[in-house]
Length: 125
Image (tube, rainbow, N blue to C red; front, top):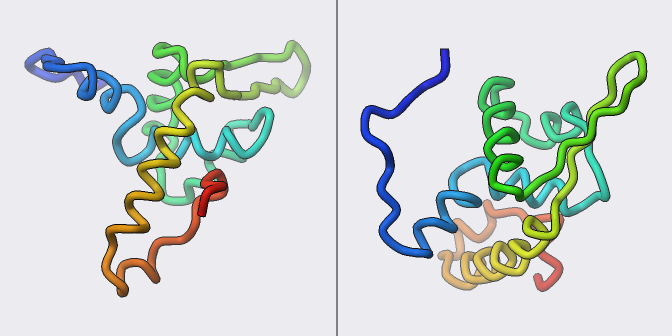
């Protein structure tokens, strides 16, 4: 059973719209993983996000596809093969995420800074 919010989320500004599409705990991480390769399979994404459930990953991938951030290509072969990759819209989000990553590194205290690993796609760091 899919979770349905009681009230439809009201988007108040363009920033909130964008954060709804690529923000949150998982979506930005999925985008960064897909940015590191031309295409990735579900199991590869799942391995990078070691503490995500299959239900949440499937839902996040579906939402990113619906928002035209990622592509899903299914190959007609046995065993079935499905690959995910960034769309041009997804690639256009990368500089924004890299800027947020840079900002975060610049504004964390010394102790927290040691706990934040450098992202694979943050080429400015």
